[in-house]
Image 1 (cartoon, rainbow, N blue to C red):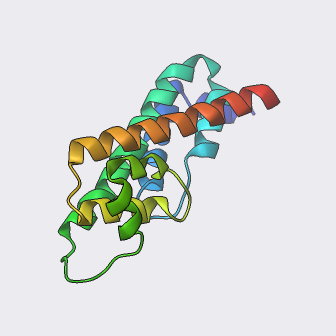
Image 2: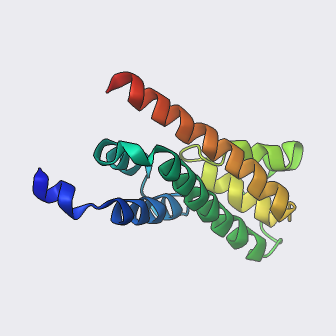
Length: 141
């Protein structure tokens, strides 16, 4: 265990968390929740930086999907368009949700939702999710 702990320095752990959270929010498979818990288990003193880095990385990943939607031609109908059309940027509070989160981000880009509003609502939803994960982890560890 000491070899693993020594290898995963604080800096390397945070970079890994950033990449995991960024890629996990795109169309690529993967999740950053276990990486976040692993970082906090190895480096509990990194609670706030880890929360911030995971949230920023995941939001940037969501904005990549948003940008992909922006680039899609508006001649085809996309799934979840009506939900995003009805609720606007606040629909992106659910951008973290498995299965529908990526579709919501792409739909928001396709609808040309204001990117700043989209990023703000994505950030709020993803921050809340990570806070709940951390609180749950702390209650069960």
